[in-house]
Image 1 (cartoon, rainbow, N blue to C red):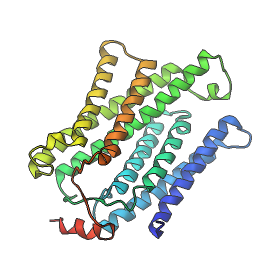
Image 2: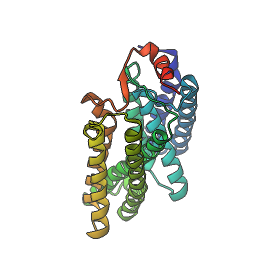
Image 3: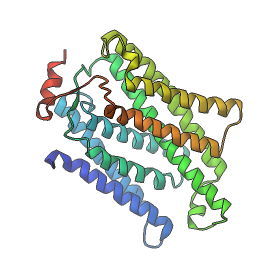
Image 4: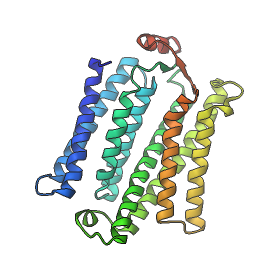
Length: 291
């Protein structure tokens, strides 16, 4: 059901979609689609996105992860925040052509979670919880970017294999350059994921959030599986010179696991500090649990 509170995020999605069209169009028809429009609309979308998160935070009096919908759009904000900073540091040519369409699609998907009745009912002012969430979200954001780089790598590899030296080929970095960027993003995401999981373990143990059998929670199990996947990937990269197509394919598989860990586990029955309640009263329920 449409609400007035949806308007800022709908505007965000429209701006991201416009950026997607202009970014792809700048490759297909550069005389009509200006690449600068893609950059500016993405930045405008990011600023509206940021303002919307501030609004949600002020509404609940906490960081905006009080339900699955807010958590999803907070993660997407982290993706673009990490991308903007990495682009400033390393100049990531054409990555937005692969990343922004993904963010746009995930943003539309995030809209379907608004009105859901899975609401977080623990104190969001707990140090261990905040220390758990921030590294996890930024780590997931880095993995999202590495996924986009993997798609870029496989696309450029296909261009070379089929000898399609057209506009797209000329816009993309070399395979070696993309491979190095994948390594950088994986090297950023893995320590953050590790830190987030360690802090998360302290959180569930000190607050007894998931009970004595906390290690059997689906989100905990798949979080560990995600960690093992990226640990194996980085280990093989260092020890066995694992790179190129194999890294790209394994990174794609790792991202699918990240997405399923983040969202899919709720469909499996994982609560992970969330509780089913009536949507109109979720702020009241949350505030009742605040110290």
